[in-house]
Image (cartoon, rainbow, N blue to C red; front, side, top):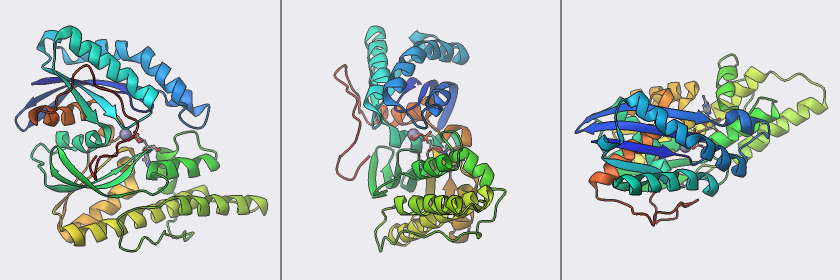
Length: 339
Ligand code: KG4
Ligand code: ZN
């Protein structure tokens, strides 16, 4: 079946057309317009500007997605759209566009959870991947550990109590004068530095699987300010490498705890921060040592994209989770333990 999917939960508008035939999952088109250059002027995402930019982009991206895929509207079997969680004004753009498209063309409509979507991006790289597995989603807005029981049954067992990992990367990068979002530049700088140069603290979370990154972020920012006040030089590569090392340590500590509790054999790591090369290398080592199969989307599908929404939309469709024109956007999700 062919699914047309829309994503507009934050600062990327994306429209994809993907094909699903049993285990064969294929991205026929994935057209994304990023708003990074606009938000970089303000050092972060400005929700009102994001909403307006999604409106300006979505129709042209839809035409481009059809052209790239080489299919017609008639051939589309269902329409999927990110309906939660995200910036409300941003989410509403794709939700309304998808509703109108589905209604006008008499196609089934599917509302998709963005975090589920990030996990589903992994199915393209690993067509044989099937729950149960354990997942971590690390992005600019979310850091969650999730027990995935089936393609549509998820239990969140750990989450950040304050900053998301990507948010911590971006805030440290900003203090260092890097343009928003600084995660990818921090990755490049860290490759040039010594990860043992500065020992930053790690939040003690006892036996909880939750994360906390605000203490680490504050420690790094205080370090930078102190150095500047004393007129001492800062090695950006060493700082980026040491900060990344502290983040990686926190992630591995919780995955270790989760592994002894859940004994999973497959680990999926997705979301924008899953593109981080140091985290990817550390996860590979962690999983190799324990005989865990590590599955991560290719870096192109770690950030927000329409293809991931199509993949999760496919499973929601199979499970009969269809929406109608009453579908609404939700900024947060507070279902019991689920995502
Ligand atoms: O999943 P995503 O595109 O959007 C959200 O749902 O938030 O994630 C964006 C986040 C940003 O915080 C960005 O700085 C971070 O992912 N990011 C990275 C890297 N590439 C993107 N963080 C660390 N290393 C990277 N290579
Ligand atoms: Zn995301």
